[in-house]
Length: 115
Image 1 (cartoon, one colour):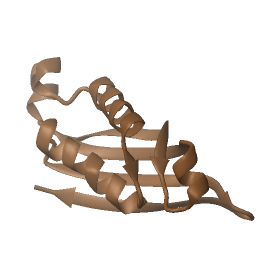
Image 2 (cartoon, helix red, strand yellow):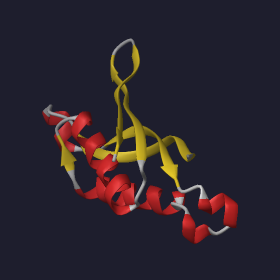
Image 3 (cartoon, rainbow, N blue to C red):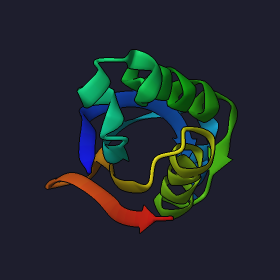
Image 4 (cartoon, rainbow, N blue to C red):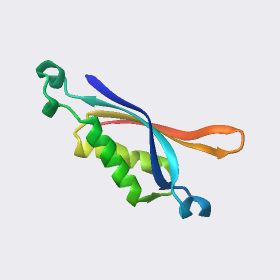
């Protein structure tokens, strides 16, 4: 299986349980790795792979309009997009809030799912 990765994508999202987190979006750092069909590389055909630009645009659009209490829920939502809408057979995601606590650079979750 071939994979595409997107590292350290910055996206503004409404996520969190505290009032300050509900009042304004915060920047998250998202990294994704997802499986793609082997045929894309064999045929050199963009239509046989998952377009990373479409994935990035879709994630940004979705997160701009939704609120999630938990990073875990946000991660499961993004994984659902990749598995169900884009047809990825396997997805791994890492999502981090940056500078959320004094003396801590990042706090986040990692989730891995397959069909």
